[in-house]
Length: 108
Picture 1 (cartoon, one colour):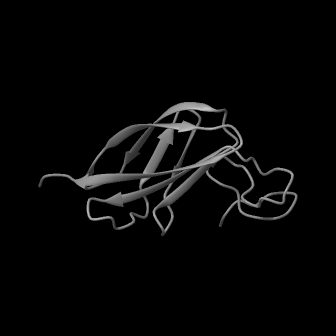
Picture 2: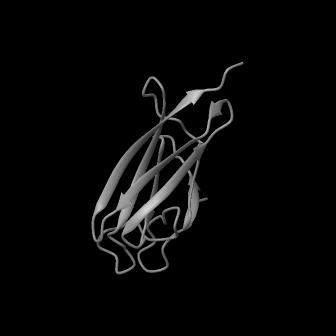
């Protein structure tokens, strides 16, 4: 069961911030991460972390972190059967930044 905002009852993102842009708890500075395999197929259940939090990708391969300070963050993605990937992304004050991070299947 998803955690809900106590004001508007919308779902909270991985950083426990409201995802409803009309809610007072909504934070505009956000990183929207999409995790794919090397062919571009979305990966559900990938673990995504950075210094301020962590989350797991949904069925669309996405996880959203919001309410963060502007700056550069190292994002680490891991999933069983794939090689971990760490990349740097920059959060811009009061903006959404989208990034696609591809994982490569581990050698058997």
